[in-house]
Length: 189
Length: 192
Image (cartoon, rainbow over all chains, first blue to last red; front, side, top):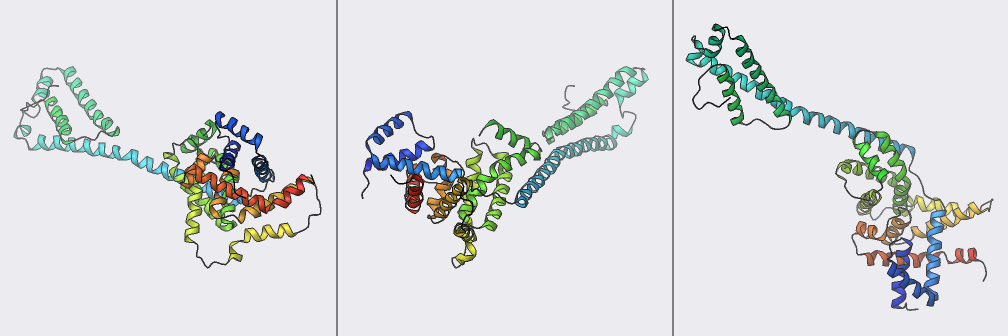
C-alpha cells in the first residue's frame, strides 16, 4: 500500500517526538494528524513498543573488566607522558635564561679583560673612586642593583620572553656602566 | 554536556585518574552496546572500544564541545566504519558472527522459568537479533538512538547526512523490525 505523503511526514514527526526534538507547533500538528489517521497511530504505538522493549530488556553488554583496565592504564600513561612533556616545556625557558645569563657574564668578562682600560688602574674607576672615598654605601647599592638585573634576566626568560640580542646588549651595557665605564651611546640607568 | 561530566574531564586533565574511571564506567554500557551491535563480534568490539577511548583521551584536552556522549559515539562510529573498510570480503560469516550464533542459540534454548523477566529478556534478544539483520546504515541510526541515546540532530551530524536522511533510515529500520517482530507484538497485545 502506498503511503500518504502526510503520513510519511507524520511518521518522521513521531520519531522526533520520541527523541524530544519536536517543536510545540509540530506537536499540535502531529496530534491533529494522529486524531484522524489510524495507520500513524498504530505506527506510533509500534515504534514506542520497539524502543521500550529494547531499552527495558536490559540486553546491553558490558566490556570485559580487562578492557576497562586497559583503558584506565592507557589514561594513566597518557597523563604521565603529558606531565613529563609539560615539565620539559617549562624547563626549556629556564635553560634559555641560564644560557642568556652566562652569555651576558661572559660578554662582560670578555670586554673587561680585553679592554685596554680594563687591564689598567681604570678597571672600575667609579668603584675605585667610591672605595677610595669610603663611599661603600653607594658601591653596595650599585652591586645590589647589578644582582637585581641578573635576577630580572632569568625571570623574563621563565616567562617565555626570550632575550634578543638588543636586550642582551642593553643589559651588558648597564652592567658595564655600573662598573664605572664610560661607554659611548650609554643607556641611562 | 552536564556540569558533572565537564568537571570529571577537567579533574582528569589535572591528573585525577579516578575521575576518568567514573566517566569510563558511565559511558561504557552505551558505547560498548553500540559497538558490539554494529560489529557483531566481541573481540573486535573490545578492540574498537579501547581504541575509541584512546582517541578520546588523546583529544580530550582540546575537547570543547557540549555533548561528550555524541562526541565519543562519533569516534566509535568512525572506527566501526574503518573496521568494515579493512575487513576482507571473504571472511566467513561463521567466524564473524559469533554474536549472532550465541544469540540464536540462546533463543533456541527453551526457557524453564517463563516469568516476566525472562519474557522481557527473550523479547529483547529477539529485537536484537532482528536489529542485527538490518542494513548497516539503518542499524547505525537505530543503535545511536536506542543504545547511545543520541538525538536525531546528533545522529545526522555523526553520519554526515541530512536530518531527513537519518529519519528515513530510522523509518526503514522500524518498518523492518515491525515485520520481523509482528508475531511477538501480536502475542504481547493478545487477541483483540
